[in-house]
Amino acid sequence: MSDVQKPNTAEMEKAKSLESAGWGALLLWIGVTTLFGLGWPTFLRGLGLLVLGVQGARYLWGMKVEYFWVIFGVVFLLAGIVESFGIGFPLVPAALIAFGLAALYGVLRHINDSKV
Image (cartoon, rainbow, N blue to C red; front, side, top):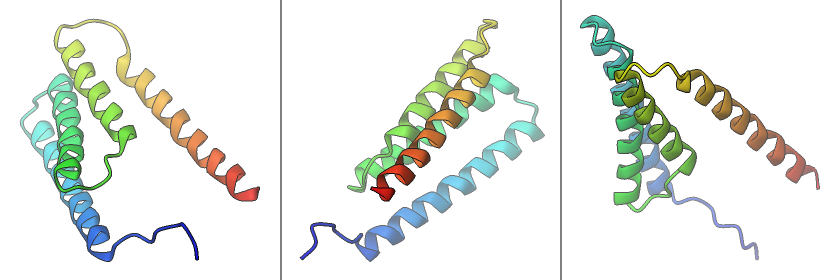
């Protein structure tokens, strides 16, 4: 008997629905911020809040919280706040590079673990 648990179909459906709602909200947010010219800081703050909101919903629904996305949300929320004050630190490009490296590292580590 295997110790690996297969995901519950109902939970997978909930996760899929939540992911679809998150993507829909993201596209809506991009459209609103560009249509009304709300600016980069407002977009970043909204993006951070949107991502954190999806993770909060996962928590409230008893689903596993994805900490990568929690960190992503916090960083982009902070980036929007920093941009609002006109501070010249390139937080967004640095964060995108860091998140890209983290994602690649995770994939490569998973590939190495599956070879063993």
